[in-house]
Amino acid sequence: MNLLKFKIQKQLYKLKAKFSGDQAAQSKITGEELREYWSNPPDDKNKPEAYKDETARSDYLVSLMDQYAKKNDQIFELGCNIGRNLNHLYINGYMDLSSVEINTGASEQLRKNFPEMAANSQLHNSAAEEFMATLEDNSFDIMYTMAVLLHIHPESEWIFEHMVRATKKHLIIIEAETSVEYKLYARDYKAIFEGLGMTEVFSEPMPVMSNYMTRVFKK
Image 1 (tube, rainbow, N blue to C red):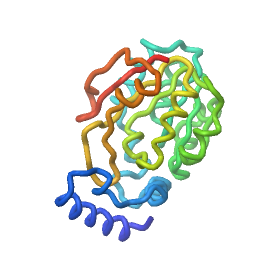
Image 2: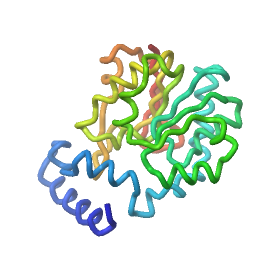
Image 3: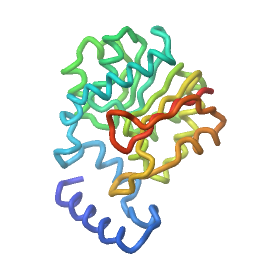
Image 4: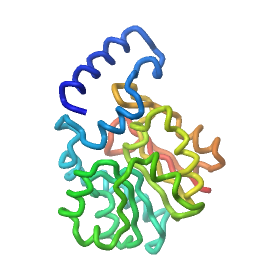
């Protein structure tokens, strides 16, 4: 998706949002267009390098893992981008790491910036929709997301079932639940994942990300 097309679609969204309170009606971007955008974002705000230095977020994630995971647990990140979170886990003793990331450029920068972690982890470059359905049941002890599910198109919400199916112990969700903007989809993740059979064991407003919620679910 080129920058001009992105800007035009964003302006159209803003106009439509003025006349509709319905999220599905507000965003006319298709699932295919959304995946195309995230495979190579044209705007500087969402370039991979923009995510490298948000270390406070990764420190927070490590503190959660210390409560719910063992050092030898199999841990999977859905949407790892440049790999900042994975590297923080790695240098804190979590060695069995896997991830999937749609953005090829981000995956390349991950390997360049964090070569040791990359060499010792299972990293997949693919759309979540293509990858999640291939996982076996209980593939990972811990699965987590940070600011990723809000970019999943409504037509792809079926991947939530695969997240539950592939998680053995805990699912950690750090996501915006109220923002309704271009390319963002607000959801009640407590209702979604408890509706899929998991039990919420912890929740709090994410202290270093405004308007985000942390939720931990147990299988």
